[in-house]
Length: 242
Image 1 (cartoon, rainbow, N blue to C red):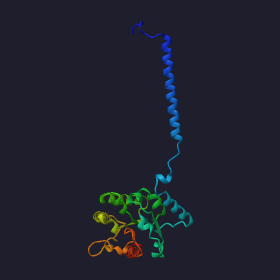
Image 2 (image 1 turned 30 degrees about the vertical axis):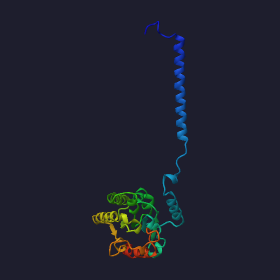
Image 3 (image 1 turned 60 degrees about the vertical axis):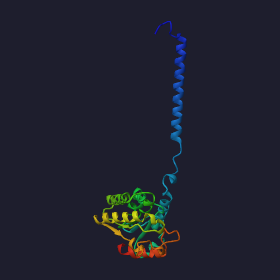
Image 4 (image 1 turned 135 degrees about the vertical axis):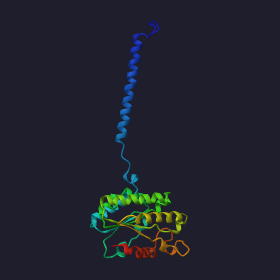
């Protein structure tokens, strides 16, 4: 640089000091922001996990009356949760209901330890997949989720039987009947290739001669079972409860 064009030393020093002050201020702001972020409260657990309340209820029930290992466990969505007299339907058998309404098969896989492994059942019945399809999953995706459920149980409890209750034909979900039939067929075929699995076909008993859902088996919402529907389930599922 031409010495004649170089700023005086006092100007250069002032500029350097100003730059240092700006860098220092930026560092303070960054540190303050990071500290604020680290001090921010964690998201509410219930908001992060929509099933936190259901599992809290299960925990309280387990503390009050700890289930013995080796029982018969029913898991899945509201069709299991609303089966309020399940234990009386299978009196004399150590039956445990751990249905959580609105859940998908993917939720059963995600919560496998708390839902299944902790109880160490001799048999677990699964009713799920209905809500997965309603949420947009394909039959192939639902079948893969069931395969992951099986693999997760087998990894810790290789002797536990796993019985899949077929997806029911609900009048409220007539538009999904093709996907329901396809999903049931995929899972039925998969089950046939594995030992220790069973496919429990409630679908066939719940449609009329024309292949339409039998409305008399459902509540007014045309989605959930009434007492007649559960009596039918008991008859179909009963031979597998052992």
